[in-house]
Image 1 (spheres, rainbow, N blue to C red):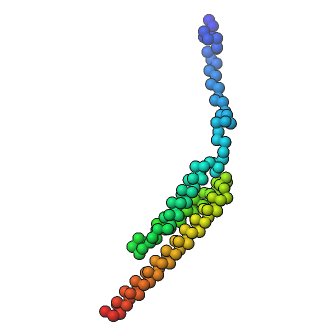
Image 2 (image 1 turned 180 degrees about the vertical axis):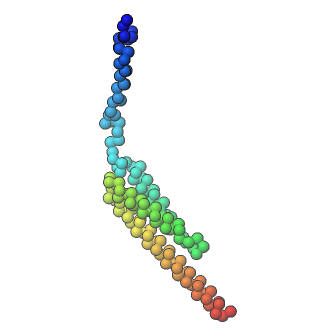
Image 3 (image 1 turned 120 degrees about the vertical axis):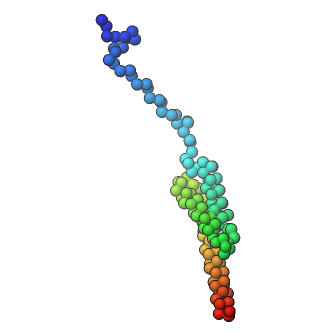
Length: 132
């Protein structure tokens, strides 16, 4: 009695695992680093532009300045991402920093304007209390 099946391999020998897949070719991997891809530059620019536009919105005593600060935050995130991604060009980094500075200045100016308007209303209401 033979212990070998018709395939010629002994019964107790486990089957061999399949060959591992071949490593991908260098041609299938992206040839440019992440920061050099035009969509990364476009995304950073779009995020900074949206944040900058939000930071330039009008404020009032009823709405407050939350939108302006959100715009500053988005612009600052875009600038930080521009410095984290190593292949970001210098001109884009400079524009992002300029947008952050202008956004911050606008937010601070709006806060000071709101504070001034609140003081005017407080003086008006305190004048009404003393007269009436």
